[in-house]
Amino acid sequence: MRKKLMNMILVFVACGIYTNVSFGNVVRYEELIKPGGPGLAYGETIRIIGNVSDFKIKGESIDKWVTLNQITTKYKIDTGKEKEVLGKVDSETGDWEIVLEPLPLSSLISLTFKIDGRLSDAGAQLLVLNVLIDKKFDEMVAKFFNETKGKPAILDEPLIAFLQEVKQIAENKKPVYFQQKITPSAKTVILSAEEKTSIRSIVNMKEKVRDIADEVNDSNIIQSTMAPHEVFEFLKLMDSEEVPISVQEIQSKYKNYLKQKTNLSKYVDTFVKNYLIATSAIIAQVSQEITAEFSMSSEMIASSTTQDIQKYAGVDVGAVYAPRLNEFRKFFIVSIYYGAVDDKPLEGKGVWEYCRNRFSFSIGWDAGDLSNNTKSDIDGTSAYVAEIGYRLNKYFRIGAGRIFYRSKADGDIKRDTAYSLSVDLMGFKALQGLVAKQ
Image 1 (tube, rainbow, N blue to C red):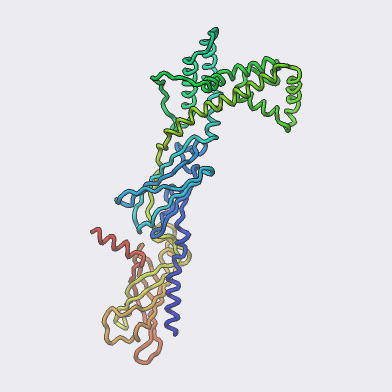
Image 2: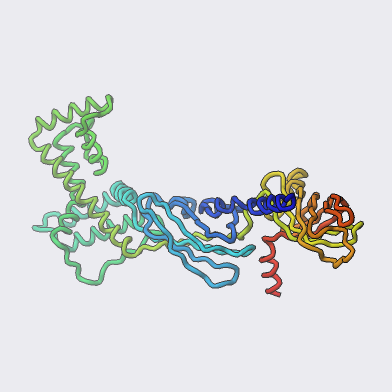
């Protein structure tokens, strides 16, 4: 009964030492790509999780510009065949997840992450803002009016040329991984009535600002040199029910002007309408191309070696030699450490860390005789060992301590000095693989 109880305890300890495996198979991308980042636990499904903000190009996160549509991962283990996995994406939050199949022990894995996306709404708004405040945009508007001044009607050619220049400014304002070369079309472009309205709205925004400024005729409230987006934000503020105290006086004057100036309300309405149409037109032009053609050309690559997760104990199989008994015995040994240790003993961490990672208290139970000693004093397999173990490297351990056994001669419990050499059970697969490659 005592023997069965001891075996049950040892089996329980052996089964429980890797309990943190179930928690070790989730890895964050931002941690994985760090120098000396975590290895990937072997033998279980791996979940790599992250957010679009984790992807950076030239140190800048792309989440300000990109809405993530799809993520794929190509990975190769050692020199094996490359595999591709399609991940899950939450377009609203930018969160993503890649699931890899169980990985073999002690193998090098190369991971390539490729994302596909489109220009985000926030990126589109920022892009429009950058276009409207660009000095070249003002020059284009002035040039357009000079070239079309006095003509009975604005022809399509000037409108098309203007739109082409707006798109080029927008391209130059985008991050490099979004930029596309804009070349004039060789085909004859026919604009729809809606497109003509949109382009004219872009052109006329500056003129509508001047109309409002001239009508108010108060530089403390609005100026003709203000950019369209500044006027738009100003008008939104003036229309707000709650404004800061510092702006209340200006709002009061503006509302008085609305009552006194008969054309001001009409100019304001026309400007707001033109502004909304114009900004939507710019966004539609650049977004349409990106949605159709954009694919992340920069691939985020990380390499890692699959490894055992940190553990508090190790299970070995090995041989125990008892000099006085002059026999070898097969033993299963559980080595218990003082705190969690890495699978491979750490070097250069100081005396305490060195000892903590290499020395253990080990207990084990007999699995049978190896020396064919017909005169053995050990009764069956009723032997146990308690010793101090020392890890030579990732797989092998030596130990010295006491072997406890029931004597055949008189049935008493006896003890003798014993030495052991063992190998980590989790290393068998790796060792078999090394042998197979020879």
